[in-house]
Image 1 (cartoon, helix red, strand yellow):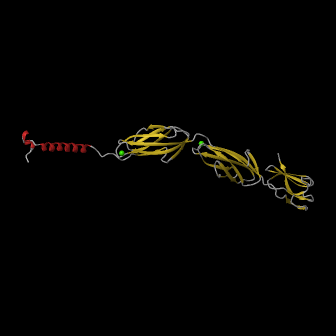
Image 2 (spheres, helix red, strand yellow):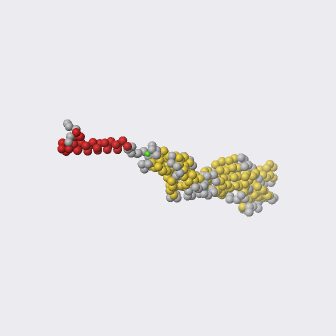
Image 3 (cartoon, rainbow, N blue to C red):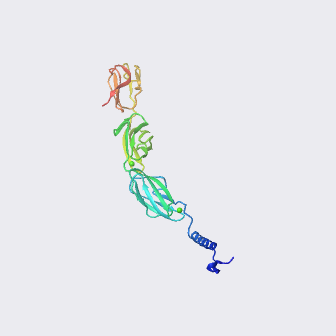
Length: 300
Ligand SMILES: [Ca+2]
Ligand SMILES: [Ca+2]
C-alpha cells in the first residue's frame, strides 16, 4: 500500500479520509481517558464524638456543642447539621474535624449530621440530646403528709410521689437514726419499708433527674412500742387481760402496742396509742364492762 502522504492530491482515494478520521478519534479518546479519574462512588463516614459517642445525651443547658470527625476516600466538601425539634439547620465549622453550636428545645432533640464529598455522596450520624429544664419534685404522702409521725410498728412503710419534666433516675431514702439507706420501689409512685429504732427517726427521701437536679422531702418518725401493764383486782375486767381474774403479777392489756399514755380509775382504764387512738377497758367504759381493750375514739 502506498502512504497517502506521499501521493499527490489526485492520487488520494475516499477510504484514506476514513483512516485519518479514525486515527484522530482514537487519539482524542485516548487523551480523554488518560486525564479523567473513575467516578467516586464511596460515601463519607461521619462520627459524633462530643458531647458523647453514645446515641443519647441529657443536658440542662442550651445551646450545646456537637463535634466529631468525617473522612472520605477523596475529600469532604461540607458537614451540615439539622435539629428536628427546632427545624434548625446549619453548616459545621471544619470538615475532617468539625463542630457546631446547636440550640435545643425542651425535651428530645433528634440531631442529624451529614458529611458530603465532592461527588455528592453523603454519610450521616445521629444523636438524640434531651434538654432538661425543670427541677424534680418528691413528696412523702404515706403514712402522712405531716412533718412528724408516731409509729407503733417497725418497719414502717413510707410512700409518696415524685415528678420530673424528663425522667427520674430513682427515689432514695435514708434514716439518720439507724444509718440505713436504700432505693424505693417505683419512682413516680414510690414506697419503701424503713426500719425504725425506739425514739426519733429523721428520715429523708430524695430523687435525682437525668441531669443531676435533686429534690428532697423529710419526716421525723417516732417509734413507740409501749404496752399497758396492770395488776390487782380484776372483777370488772379493769386489768384488760381478757379475764375477770385478779392478778398479783403485772399482766398486759391484750392486743395493745404503741401505747403512749395510760390513765386508770378504780374499775376502768384508758390508753392513748401513738397512732392517736384511745382504747378503753373495764367497768364504765362504753359499752360497759369489757375485759379487753376496745377502740374508744381518736385523740384530737
Ligand atoms: Ca467519596
Ligand atoms: Ca428535670
